[in-house]
Image (cartoon, rainbow, N blue to C red; front, side, top):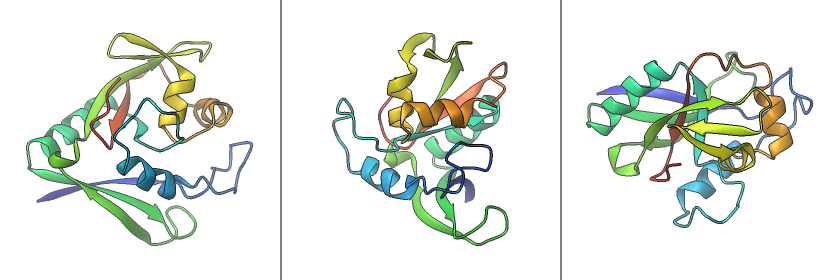
Length: 156
């Protein structure tokens, strides 16, 4: 069976204003796995945002069809220079999904499947304070389709 890997950053990246500080994504991911009420702000990481929507749409469909699994991992040290440790394995039964996301030029809103949402809600569901979320994504090229990869049954 195919395995697709998503690696969560242990620390804020070098170009972030909090570079080197821990993100606590692993703990926030685990918290999100236990939630059943997604209307309560919790800073749990119930999704991740990635470039290349068409690629992730294809991969997530394979997982949903039972032809692949999604391995959620974290680097033990420096990214690409250390081992990865698996946090969880997600399958179709986990409720994973993918949605198309665009961001307005002023970062005020995220448009997910043609519905407008405050970036604040998206940031918190991504496990980040809204200011950290803006700084994290400020260098992304939002002219290309982005994917929100859901780790739970929650959808926008």
